[in-house]
Length: 185
Image 1: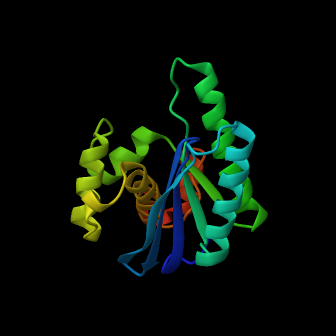
Image 2: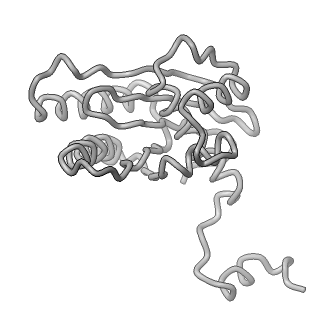
């Protein structure tokens, strides 16, 4: 994990038709939007070509913006197994692109992202975009919801790291007390 006071986080909302990305720069307590956009993949007819394009574009974003960390949304578990497999492959390709550049990757469930950004794990995409508009001043109407979803993943990662103070998760009360001696009564 990088220095908490100055870091660049890339958030990815993986998809095989549209992939969203959002990049933030955190300096102390201030969060600035660096880049936001989507990669449209519907012009590519076969799945392997789409995966190759996702890998190349994600690698390009990593080279261009030099993020310290990647946050990616976990696939939503639906009833269509084929869709899940394709989405999982897209996620894996994004992760591989980051890992090939030694960028650590953290995965968040859609519910966790929504909860972190809006306070409601069942929030709509529009509610997430509206909250990001409030937090960062992003004109949500200008961007596809896949882009604002990706930005929400990056913000979720920032919020989670801020809450934990960058400390590793503990495995029980003994470990918690050892890590937090001042919290013992």
